[in-house]
Amino acid sequence: MPAQTASEKQHAYMIKTPIPTLVMSLALPTAASQLVSVVYNTADTYFVSQIGTSASAAVGVVFSLMSILQAFGFGLGMGASSLISRNLGAKNEEMAFRYANSALFAALAVGNLLLAGGLLCLQNLMRVLGSTQTILPYACAYGRLILIGAPIMCASCVLNNILRAEGKAVLSMWGLCAGSLLNLILDPLFIFKLRMGIAGAALATILSQAISFCILLSAFAHGKSIVRLGLRWVSHCPADYINICKNGFPTICRQGMASVASALLNVSAGAYGDAAVAAVTIANKVYLLVRNLVIGIGQGFQPVAGYNFGAGNRRRVKEAFRFACLLGTCLCMAAAAMLLFRAGAVIGWFRDDPDVIRIGTGALYYACAVMPLMAYSTYVNQLYQCLGFSRAATLLASCRQGILFLPLVLILPRVIGLAGIQGVQPAADFLTFCVSVPFQIVFFRHVLSEK
Image 1: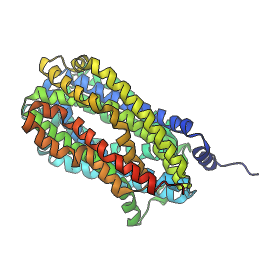
Image 2: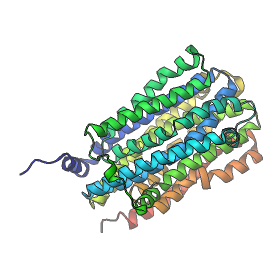
Image 3: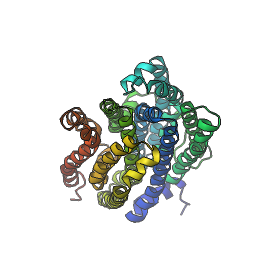
Image 4: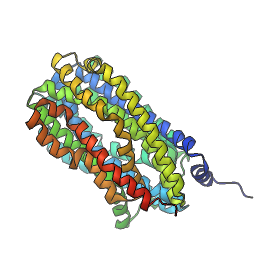
C-alpha cells in the first residue's frame, strides 16, 4: 500500500481517535492560547491601572473598539474554519484551500477599511464607545495605535482559525502565546521605563500582534499546515465570500454586540463616575478570563464536530459535544468557587481604590452565580455554527450581549441602580442558558439523529 499523505493521516486521526483523547488534544492548546491571551489582557489592564482610574477606565472603552476589530477578524476566520473542517472531513482539499485564502484576503481588506474609517473620526468614536471627558485623552491615545494594527489583528484571527480548523491547535497556540508573552514584557517597558504612558500599552499590543502574525504565517510558509496559502487560491467568486460571511456571521454578531454591550455598560456606569467604569471594566476582564477558557475548549471541540459531521459520523459529533460540556462546566464551577471567596482581593490587585473594589466585588459575585451555566450555552452556539446552521447560530450568538442584554442594560440600572449595572451581564447569561436548552434538544433529535 502507498504511504499515507499528511492530509490522510490527519483525516484518520480526526475521525478515529477516541473522543475524550481527541477533544483534549485540541482543547488544551486552544484553552492555553486563550489563557495566555487573557493573562496579557489582564496584565495590560493592571499596568494601565497604575497610571490612574481614568486610564484604567479607558481600557474598557478601547476594549469595545478591539471587539469591533475582532468581530470582523474572528467572523471571517470562524466562517472559513467551519467550511475548511467540513471540506477536509469530506476530503475536498481544493475547496478548503480556496476558503482559507479568500478569508485571509478579505481580512486584510476589511482591516485597512477599519483603520482608515476609525482614524478619521477617532474622538467621536471614543465618545460613542462610552468615554467621558476625563477618559477621552487616554482613550484616544490608546485607540489610535490599536487602529493602526487593525489589518494585522484581523489577518492573525484568520490564520489562527485556519490552523485550528485542520486540527493543528498546537501550531496556533505557539503563535498566540509568543505574542501575548512579548506583550507582558513590553507593557512595563514602554509604559514606565520609556515613560510612554497609555500609548506605550497600545504600542506593546500592536507589536505583539505583528509578531504573532509572523509566527502563524511561518507555519504555512514552512509546510507545517495542510492548507496552503497562495494567490491562485484567492476566489474571484462572490458566492464564496458570501458563504464565508454567512458561516461567520454568528461570530460577527457575537463580537460586534459585545462591543455595543460594552459601550452601553460604560455609558450606564459613567453616571456613577470613573470609578464605576473602572470597576466594571476590571470585573469583566476577570469574567472574560473564565469565558475565554471555555471558548478555548469549544474551539478544540469544533473541528472535531466539523470533521466527523463532514465524514457522516453523527454519533461522534454528539459524543464530542457532551464531553466538551462536561469539561467546560467543571472548569466554570472551579473558577466560580475560587473567585467567590477572593473577589475583593482580585479587584484590589488591579486598582487599590475603595470605590472600585466595592463596585467590582459586587459585579464578580453576580458573575460567579451564573458561571457554571456558561459552558453549555457556549457550546450549543458553537455546535450550530461549526456545522453550518448559521441562522440558528446567529440567533444564539446574539442573545448573550444583544437580544437579551440590550433590554436589560437599558432597564435594570433604572430600576435597581448600580446593582443593575453589576448584574446585567450575569442576568443575560442566565437567560441565554434557558434559550439554549430547547435548541440543543431539537438539534440532537432532528439533525444528529442516527436513525
